[in-house]
Image (cartoon, rainbow, N blue to C red):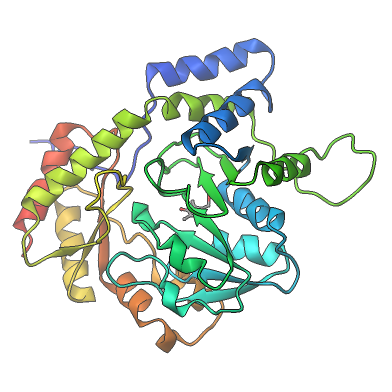
Length: 346
Ligand SMILES: *Cc1c(COP(=O)(O)O)cnc(C)c1O
């Protein structure tokens, strides 16, 4: 018997409506930044109940602008969780600011707000795989807080900080190939972001990156955003299917009790690295691609050569976690195959 094809860790869901939305832009004669980008910005401002939005070329660009608009520049201290994507470091360092790398919590993998240096002028609070970071605690000492919503969308997240950033790259919740968006509670700061983005035909010169998003990508993002409720329901249903069979002896990332929180990943936590590696091999034998969502070498304190003894929780997370496929394009048969392996783990 021919074995069924391997289930990937992620696969984008592109519907006939998505294809049509992109085709309409291609036929319109206007493929760069234009009406689709403006509509995407309006959709996000509406979702977040006000403020202002600026769509850009990536989540990294959104982080860079969020910090810059909030007045962060050379020498300023910006707190970032160590268990996060290198985009955070890139945004901070490209502004000439100083990253203060902070430990994360062992249960939900979000920044440990109690360890944020009081001198930090800004904090990037990542909603890790969808789990909600404690935004209020991040701002306790007066720092500006940027909610990194690249792995979360809708619900309560994004409305509590000074700014929020989103990514539309290929594996995210809204997957438009590439793209990002920065939202500011203060509409004037969103205006500053849009002004930065206009690099062409300026009367006075200042050095700028080209952060423009194309309407081709914005149309794809908008088309997916229009079915966010269905995306949300499908992701929650897949998570529920896994939770129904997860052996009691096996832990999973915390932070998804609240129905309004959208699960971006389903991350198992094993007692040690060898149990994790054994389980990964079991999934591979069954044709399921389970992934280590962040490897040790990617931890921000490792990139910066900081003392690992200060980050025991992050070190434990990278050694013991495994992420199962969880994406709306999964078929029910694929979900059942993954669940079957999960159920057999002890
Ligand atoms: C993907 C991601 C980013 C960066 O977004 P890009 O569009 O890839 O630049 C930033 N932060 C988090 C948490 C992400 O998951």
